[in-house]
Length: 318
Image 1 (cartoon, helix red, strand yellow):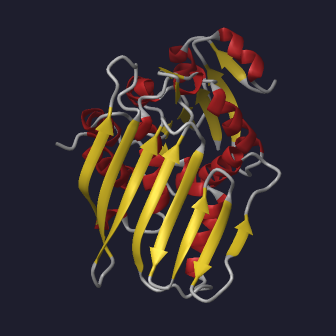
Image 2: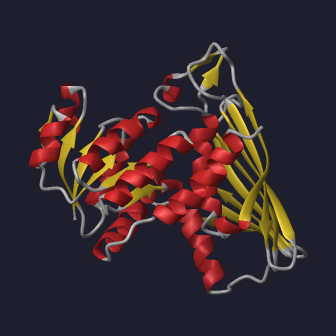
Image 3: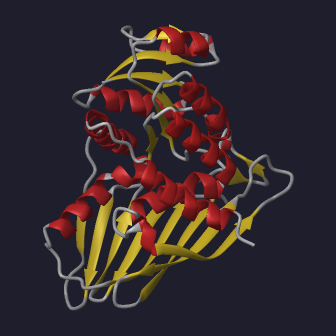
């Protein structure tokens, strides 16, 4: 599968490394508004200064949109209107209206549309999914969860460079947390209870803190959970805690480890990190999934719709 990259920013470096480590996929073309970014590309990749020209000439099977989230709608729509396949870095877009327009455009042209939920392919997440499938631990019913995604994007009353191009704490981190939870809970069985966003009018982002409270169906009774995203804590902290009837699981998404706490037993700690950066590990999972789905003529639109519904419900809750 041949990929064309649109946007050569910080995250693209990890994406290019992951492509090089994933069988069945290669990077052939790239575009960025800054021609100097061409120097960051492997020698085998053709750089296009003009996006329209790349749409016309590229032999790519799909185009990976790795531009800032506020630009996703415009860029993805341009790819779709060129009758090309778009693969979009999460989030797909930043409003329900934009999502409806993109899904309608892709459906009208019978084009697949794939969203890259890279956090859901963290090694600690993949490990726990496997443990559940193989029934290696008896923890009983899931009763609740807490998922926090914190980045150092707000210090001393101002946004840091890391926040440049990001829409806001909830739009950036909320979708990552929800995509992880969707590996463990059927997202169609989740519904919003309350959403709370904290904005600072002088800052060029939609919110510096966002929180969603959700109810989920466990079959026997409802469980509840909190998704918290925050740029004001002054630390990089990404953790999901899952409370089961007979134990607690902590998934540290920043350090790639898991801690299992069971009554009457010693805590078990599993280090799932490798010699590769965690984001490279994430995108290797993304690209493996993409190539499998592409070969079958499938995409993850249904999952994307469910996750963005939960994301936007909290964002625009009144």
